[in-house]
Length: 104
Image 1 (cartoon, rainbow, N blue to C red):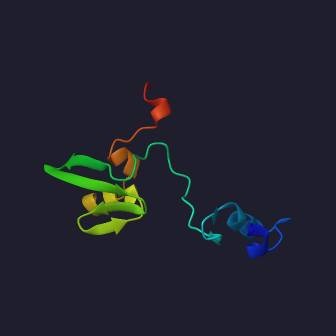
Image 2 (cartoon, rainbow, N blue to C red; image 1 turned 45 degrees about the vertical axis):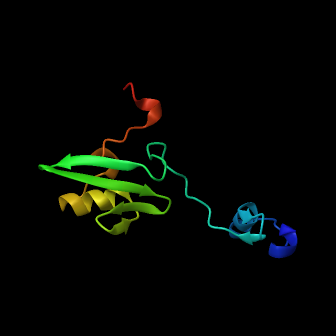
């Protein structure tokens, strides 16, 4: 069925192969596939808390980003920048560590 919907999948046509591999089986149409998630990132629905300069901040992890102060941000770094006014690595700001490297 997928070959009928997307044509023959061969050669270097990477985009077509990607659509073929990530098609929604129920509708046989391409679906949005999730980006490779960082192992440090908690599951959607998790709330990240951080105290910064005497204020408590809370961010909710969503399927499509991070909710903070009524806005949806694409990255934790964008949230950290909104909070601090300067550039921060979001994982460092929220103290998220790689699960495989916790003992280091």
